[in-house]
Image 1 (cartoon, rainbow over the protein chains, first blue to last red):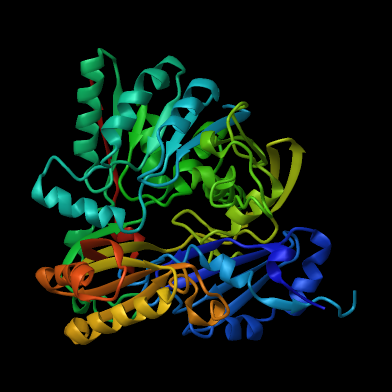
Image 2 (image 1 turned 90 degrees about the vertical axis):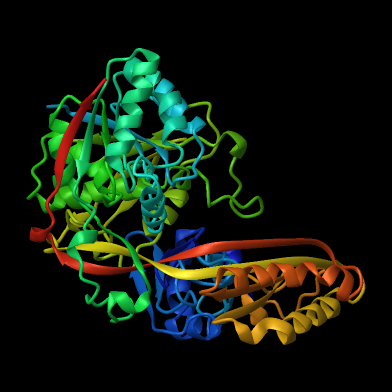
Length: 107
Length: 440
């Protein structure tokens, strides 16, 4: 079975210059391992291939039970000079939550 | 020495509401109120205002905020720490004194100076973002260093009611009173890390009480029309309890705290401020009561030898035009309109962008490919060094009323000057802060 990330997790988008930062936090802490397994850097790179031009680093936070994706060269030319309507990328947490994952494995 | 300190955060950006700060000051039983009002670019824009008028350049809402808050602050013996000084803290402080005199109130303001390092840069420094010389970006308008607690502590040692700063790292606005009131040693990196975590959680005000969080389907938040801003009780060992004034709207939960902890954090294991390289990875939250969470953990790894300096430059002008289409063939008509504008003026701009609002302007074409909206708003944007060319974008979009596709409505046009911001690092030994005290 596949489902959208928004069914099991929430996300907040932040920006620093041309870097986009997306948290991914499960509603139920028991879903943390599923997120670690399913939401790999490769999947996020593919999902954002039109948005993110640089590297993506994934930080795993087992104490907090959250993931953090730091995406470089992700906001066109950066918040202050971008022509994008959403120059900060504030809405992009919800773009991440559109990703579909397979939740049947190992559960 | 206090055993417990209470700090409220009544503003998280320059345009924030005033009423939550009033409620915090009136009913929050605060020792300190912090108003964080300075985004990356805000100070560069303020520098431009100062250039036109040497008495301007502080926060545009400073007067309104101080007028409302001053009697409450003095009545409740709450000290205010704020970066509303922006590009001109001294002029901001003079304005505050003027307000106090008008209200017949006795007041001292301590001004923190030294963040403005515009005279210390040559323009040949390489930016952190692009590794290119600053001057290659455009005409430079400002350079402000992020100062830390060491610049605020001397101000706290005076008996000033208000501490007014320019550019200071946001968490430092909170960490400074913790150090001063709880007797912390700045070389205790663990406490500096913990205090920085707390400051970071509070600095965006409403973003930990349900703002930028609420989703009526998956994350409902009550009474957002009267969203309360947070306060925190900090104990000498660095533990903290975050809450809000009862009766205000919003919610504070483990979930709102997790989102805010990670907000804008490039590396949760290495959050760099002027005061400490903080490690957020051990932070945990516990819900003690409704709208009351306990924060534990957080540590520090070292103190940076350099300070970040934000450099503002003139980046030309952006012109925008919008027009809407609805009903049958709305998207086809919007696309025709875009094609018309692009053929007429598209190649005259350094950058040119077409967006379909309601479909793909936020997340792009890929994620929206299976959706078809009833109505669509076309947005055209162009960037150029030439102001009148920027204005042409909106004029051309407006002209679609009579020269474009059928049923175009609600045209709007905007032009604004763009101030870009890049950063450099500067040896902190070359940056000297000082304070000045003004009295009513």
